[in-house]
Image 1 (cartoon, rainbow, N blue to C red):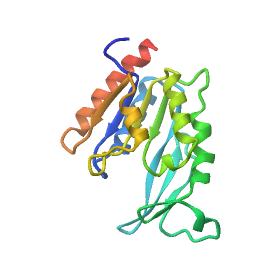
Image 2: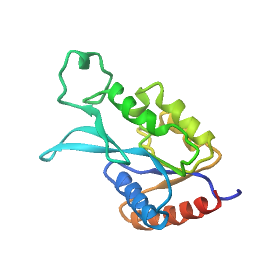
Image 3: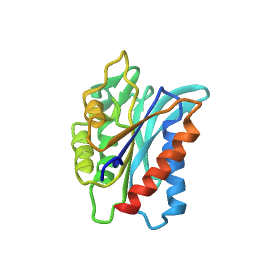
Image 4: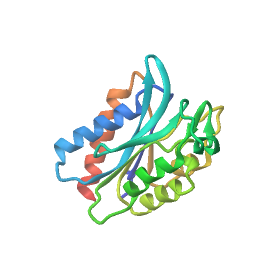
Amino acid sequence: MAGTGKCFLVTGPPGVGKTTLIMRVFESLKVSNPTLKVQGFYSREIREGRERVGFEVVTLDGRRGPLASTEISSPESHRWPTVGKYKVDVASFESLVLPELQVKEDTGLFIIDEVGKMELLSSSFFPAVLKVLESNIPVLASIPIPKSGRDIPGVTRLKNHPGATIFTLSPTNRDAAKETIYSQLVDVLRKH
């Protein structure tokens, strides 16, 4: 299938609206392709007032679990890896997300938001993402923008995937990007 990849990667600076765009595409697909079986997850900020105190992961059917927090202090959490000021609960992330990334016969689309530093602390996460890519099932995923010009190795591999198309979001192109990604996905799903 020349010209149209099956892996749609959304990137852009923090706060530009990557998750919002992905969820808007998902909502549109639910209307236009009601029988489509979509698997995956998205990440959400946990805020207290104006301050971001952590992140949680939410599956597309609404189950949720902690991903990272500045406020967790338990005996186990002292051994957890950190990203910046956040302690990352890898076990919670894996128990929720890894089953969502299992390739099943009737899966029509995977949503993976995001393939970032916290998620990649799980040694099982990236192999699961690669299996999804190898399955040839369309993928809509978000990736962080490189810090100081260098990508995380896993992100580089995704960007270099033969089927990958990268959309870099900005406040001015968000709506157009949503329409483009949606129409290209509908096209891929029709041919799939």
